[in-house]
Amino acid sequence: MNNHTVCNDNMGEEACVCAMGYAEDAPPEKSCNLVINYKENPNFQVITVKFKLDENTNIHEVFPETRFKEEIGSSLKEDEDDILILRQGCSDDDSQFIVQFVVKDKESENAELPYEPDDFVDPEKIVNKMKVIGFLTQIADFDVDEIVATEELIPIEGYADNSVLILQAIIVGVIFIICCILGIWVYSRKKNDPEYSDNLQNV
Image (cartoon, rainbow, N blue to C red; front, side):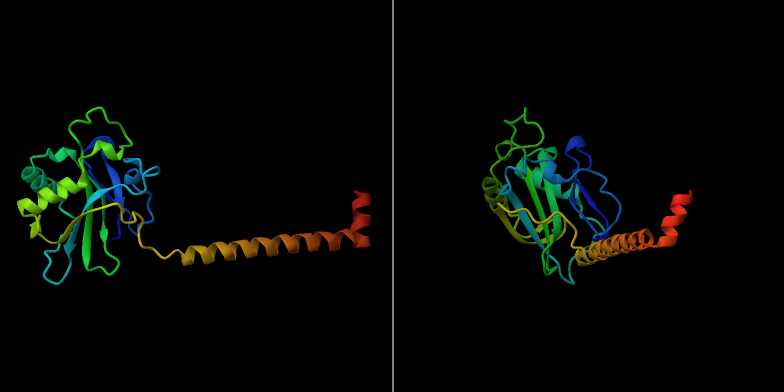
């Protein structure tokens, strides 16, 4: 994933970055962690849909979020604008594409950002409905591997290796220290040089 992924793009304040890629550009939106009260609820329960990724997968340049929401909203009798995607990403072995979302509770009309767990329909209920309706095969042309309610959001960051950045920081730190030591040494040497002292007195 080279670019940052924005989910809920047409939903105003709820638009957020649900996956960070390798791009060096600043994310175009706030993190999805700021849409929900993730800081105080790290075990935020969500609906997790895992799609199969193999040579037979219908490849899309981007995940068809609109169609995904339309199909789920239509079948569950939920407004697609109440479906809030919080994560998109691949499994560690790249065998699955993962989408994690929640459905806003109609009784929580006065809910404000960041949302609390109680502002959403119980993910367990949504998962049970999806299984009864028959969402066990395909959604938006993607083959479904598993649908579960989980209390763990996948990492939002890109899978970049930070070891290079750490090494660069160490090198910069070492160079800075060496420069400081050399500066002190040169200053001390000049200070102890009689010619340098005489020149200072003549100024």
